[in-house]
Length: 373
Image (cartoon, rainbow, N blue to C red; front, side):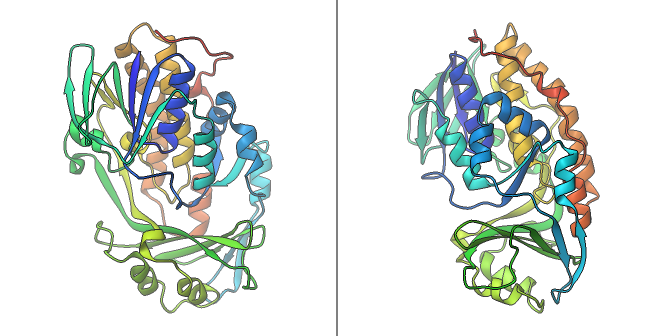
């Protein structure tokens, strides 16, 4: 079996590794020139944690994860208003929860990628032609791939989705917020997050600080925006929207890096009637984006890739595998999307929505790898 995967993010890397381990010939293309150097702090839990364990990368994730402390909520002047016992939440999940940066999770997945996966950075898909049991994929460098399956794992603004299913506007639901994530050097600053998470508890704008290693601090910011289009200058937009806040916010904004070093986007969901057509299938945010404010995106991407690979391993035909993948995984995704739609931009709502009951049933874990057909 020959598989082309478009997108070397969390879902794409995980799926490429699984398919290669199961005997497929895999070509993995990624539009970016190299691995990402931007991204937010994420919590890996529930189905994503179970998938990481089944894939065999959990120990590597734990090696670079961060302590799970409490979350402090402060007002615009930095006065502590409340706290969330994040440590106790982790214990309620039997400590099956890891906090890790998105860039470190990418590195773990990239390091786990078999050497026989043909990884091509700086390349994307430009055309897809459907056959009875094949897909002919043309890349933007002119190369052509004749594959049994094309997987679109290229994010919320998926090129594969646009080529195979139609324009983005049909499927994207904007939830009314923009978000940004960046890292800055806080080694000379006092009163940052320490081993905890500190979040401003405000109505229409929110900023969180997460202490990293080597004096670095990760920042996650979100604010209400009527226009879904991201601003041309992300740093200027953040400084404008968070102007007037006290505590550490002015210093954080002053140290905000240039726009090119900020992970910026719209808070949106992707809703589709079908995730596959002919020999093309979508995974991760390309078909099932939830919301970066509620946290489960990385877990869902990892678990969705695992569910898809397992169905391709277990099922007698590609078509049946794609059908079973969607029937198994769609209810979990839709439940998370429904929870996120009524989200208020306050810290308590965000954290509690993110850490609802984890699911294991959809994974259908298998004890050992078996070759696929």
